[in-house]
Image (cartoon, rainbow, N blue to C red):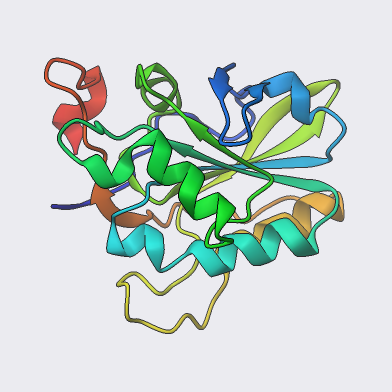
Length: 195
């Protein structure tokens, strides 16, 4: 089932904190990325065709932007969707399919709910201001909204460039589209009835 992102966080809101295990065996918290000017948090997974279509794009951002941390977070129910297991996440990192700065597992799904994540991929770009990460952009990665489409406009890239240049970001909300997050039974957040 496909879904579109909704706005729970607004521009200027502080990034919700997290402490999550990474595929490299380390545990990551928000402050671990404090040396970066910007933080791109993307709720994603291993199996969704929409998410898979953006692996290379996100790998490229992680490689090209030294001042931006690209962090993938997988919140999906791995019991119902075994391809989204932590072991499979590790395999994709080890074989080079995924090369983000960190790929994290949100087993409790509390972090996805705190961010208002709806689909995979669902990207949130934060700028570092006064010692905090504050939301600069939430919306689609680019205008290729179906897995087989070729993008012509790179919305997140434009937003990253604006943040790194100290400029404001176009705040027109263009929702991301992807597979809906696979919540565990009873874990659906309050905003889920808006989706």
